[in-house]
Image (cartoon, rainbow, N blue to C red):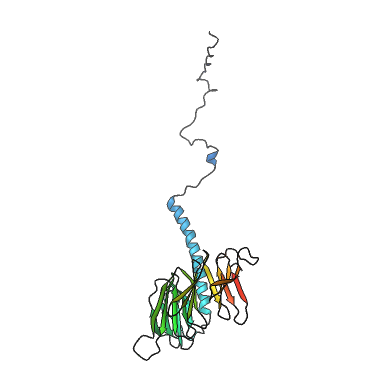
Length: 288
């Protein structure tokens, strides 16, 4: 035998019971360790049914909460003398005429209505808007009505006080700006102001349309308010900047920015207010 020849495999006697164990195949095979963990087989339809039961339960809870809220609202005493129900979607703007028994309302249904506050009768319907009407305002003397939607479409109507067959209001001015954030009239003049999503503030003389623009700085002008003397405008922006403007010169008189100790930083919502009888200015943001 050569030295590198592998050894022979020993011969086994397969007839010897010590080396051969018979396995009964007509019974169940022995359980493996993993098989001892019983796993429940669930079909797709069964799983969907179970999830559906959970969803139904959640829907039932939500339904109960909605019903409770409806019952709570129904239990509130309604002291309204009249309810205007012409709008078909949420109302975002409303204003009362300074001299007449009129109200104007604007809604998500892209409509604005002028109606009689004594009986709810529609006096005038504005259908020019193609987006949610969020601003509706009569001028300080009641001679003009301005409406604006979130897309920046603005319309001004003049009151027809003559006793003729013409409509009670007729359009005298319109303007298309970028997405509008807010709009209101000057308290003592037929001047309309509006803030835009791009940050600019527009100041128009109505009905001529003569315009001044207070420049923005790439942040939405979220809010604005006039000072007590009507000569200054306080504006706030979503980047937390607050500015006090001289309307006549379009110059910034005061600015609170992110480097200022009173700066807000980025905000989602901000409001401003000016004291009418003193040079006091208030600003608050949505985080409290």
